[in-house]
Length: 92
Image 1 (cartoon, rainbow, N blue to C red):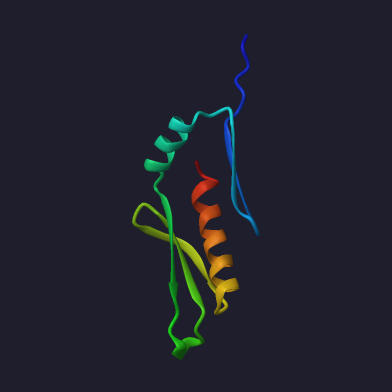
Image 2: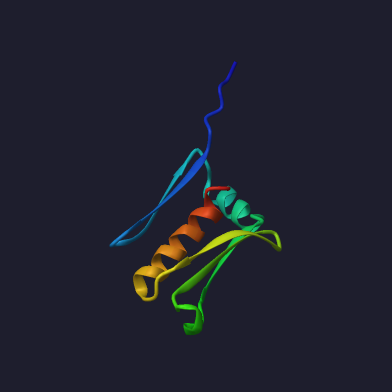
């Protein structure tokens, strides 16, 4: 009996950029999964009238599944984007 190894894609943010590690999956299979992934996210600025910062929306297909509010500035944007990216790619 042959035991199949689980495939995975690990993505990590670092000060030097994005590091992606593929285990037991080809790049073409990964690209296909990304193209057919129903999970997505959107990061948009919040109005100053409600405190500013960034708004994260998480989607499955066209349905909003959650999200969050993040502080203004580059750090807030990076945190929102990282959480959205994790939402999308942990489901591949």
